[in-house]
Image 1 (cartoon, rainbow, N blue to C red):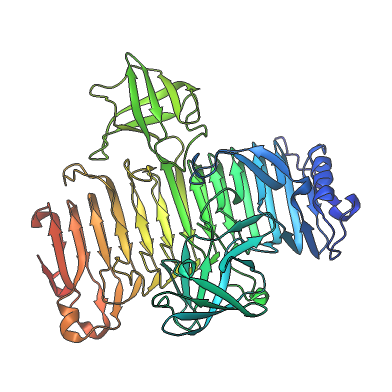
Image 2 (image 1 turned 90 degrees about the horizontal axis):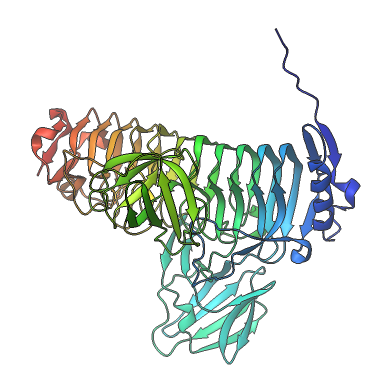
Length: 594
């Protein structure tokens, strides 16, 4: 029997290549030399970073064209060049060991990116921006037509012609999306940027501003924090592209410009004890410009375990594929497909041998399958596919194709989601998915969203085996959304032709406001059991009359063995486009079905 040969890794030190921790000097030239040396090592290698602070400036960064899903459109940012600080390409058996070091980045950069890599581990390192591109200001006072703001020291600004302009290292903006954060309740939600409407801005001291308005001042409360950004996702926090067996362990991502950690057409990814939250010593409240972890077109096993997501400007975790629209059919076996959403385009979405499905745009139900023989890029938006076999009957322009091969198994276990204005977890994958033992705190929208669409974001695909169990959902959906939403965006919903199947929601604890616990559409085999529910801010009479479940075109639905505080009735079940024979509610639930 042959023994597997596992050589001891070669260890190299970042300081041996000229980096000086805690010096304030640019460590990027040393990092590039160290990465080059690591790439030349025959066998596994560990790049050790002696503990300290390392600063990275954009002058020596790699500038490379990258098409990244869900980032800036051609109109928003025609230049696809990304400024990458730590760039790994075609490396294998590499470990970056930070020893608890802090990497601080200056200027807008993609902090970390890898392409065509294998067996990579990033561990024990913290990454942050010296001057984040999300600016923060605390409301110090408010009058009828004035607002006093205390600007965070890390937010730069100038006053030009009486107007407030935010600026940093190589960037500036005035208008942009805004959020409001209530530190007492730990809630964050999106608001209109009323600050930009100020008719005059006066500086009353360093970082102390008085904004005057021609009309009423914005309705924001003293003590709350306002967060503003320019809205253009021209960089990402980290990019994992066409890579496999990638592990992140004990990593802190304390600010990320643009989309967060993006995995694209990569496989076997794990994130363990990753903290996406501001460093407490900075006094900041924002950790990310958009999503925390965003995985598009990945496969294999995805593990997100023991992580913390706090202070983002969009979803905590989003896992999906991409629908491309059929725009041309050339029998017997050719067709042209097109990226439709402005922010997702240009990347390779199909490879020879990939299995695909043909999806009806209106129902989102697949009506045919095939295998890719060749994929020819016609431009950043269009791809010509040649299949191994003839196109299925009924294929037509306007429908969509989904890459079945690049769909992952997903395990999202033991994480915390807080201070997020949208959703905690979005997941659309046809392979086994588990969302278990997580804590979701005060998402204004749903804690968990299962979508699928071929009309808006074009994020695919169907769910076939999803378990949502053992989670704690604290006041999620308080802006009128359900705590859990399974809502594919299909224009035609038929319970005999479901989009999603086999979803079990069990052993969760819901601490609700006066909103629904579940909206479900186009699901076959949906089980909601052994959950506990409590409702805040609702009187006994109103609680009994509230609609807690909305079911549309579903079948084989079971609601049983759930409990509420004080054994009160769960409320109402509203059904649409389905018969009651497709719904079983155990008598002890106290639910009235409409």
